[in-house]
Amino acid sequence: MFTGVKNATAITAEKMPVDKLGVKALNDHTLQVDLEYPMLYFNRMMIMPTFFPQSRAALKKFGNKYGTDSSKMYYDGPFKADGWTGSNMSWSLDRNKKYYDPKSIHLKQIKMQVVKDANTAHQLFQQGNLEDAQITGTTAQGMQNDKNLKHLHRAGVYYLQLTMRKNRVFSNAKMREALNLVLDKKQLARKVLADGSTPADTFVAPTFAKDQSTGVDFAKEMKPEETHNIAKAQKLRDEGLKEEDRKKADLTYYTDDQTINKNIAQFVQSQVETKLKHTNVEIHAVSTKNVQDNVMWGEF
Image 1 (cartoon, rainbow, N blue to C red):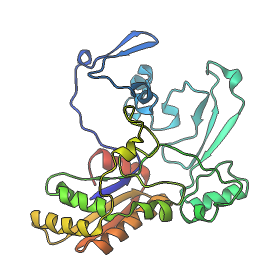
Image 2 (cartoon, rainbow, N blue to C red):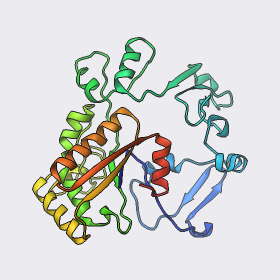
Image 3 (cartoon, rainbow, N blue to C red):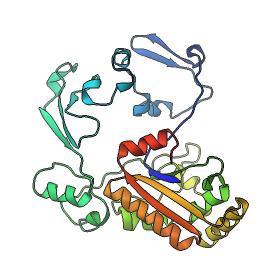
Image 4 (tube, rainbow, N blue to C red):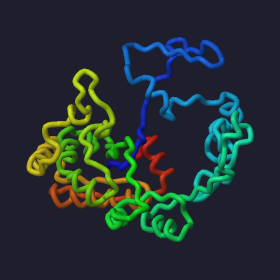
């Protein structure tokens, strides 16, 4: 089984005593981190949400319900969420009266709305019901000359997360490589996403970072020799099935129910089933929360 995700992953780690972590607070505003080896990009990593500080009072007050809806969070930014239940499609961001610099807040409120279909989002934008809408797929293809279209470069990578547990199809390395080589990433970027995305052959997005010793784009420097080879994928599939004593591979693809992600799933399904014999893909499009739960617990 495999799931299409943007930037979610399941990590298993052993608990470590606090005094062994190499992290300590020097005072109320200074955190010291001792690294095992030099990391030139460490400061940049610290701006990622994963490393944001958490309120001990909030964690103690809300427990395992912390962050499940807008009333179970603390806010230190210019806005606070109101009306978010954890699963509803609309809520608001209201001015945070406790923000340290309230005079710098010029907006009274921002209304947020989740629109899962790009065409619907475009229509709402045209009607004046949305100030901003992200478009993809056929909607984006037909709007390349629209004066309201803005191309924004963002660092991010779409990837397939595979179940590699024992007795699963992708526990075999040849089956994993076969899947990677059979997918035409250029076609996926241009025909399915059609939003300016480019093929990614490494876990680092193109133009995101350079090798400081060579000045070469890291994604280009680390690009594998082969990125798309159907004949080799078919050979690896045959060898992998034989090694696992299987006559066929039945795969289950979990994705969220956004239109673009369902389109990606259908693309993968088509590529795999038409180019790899004896390989079937069944798609399950569920809510984002269900996808995240499946990934967290390894149930995919």
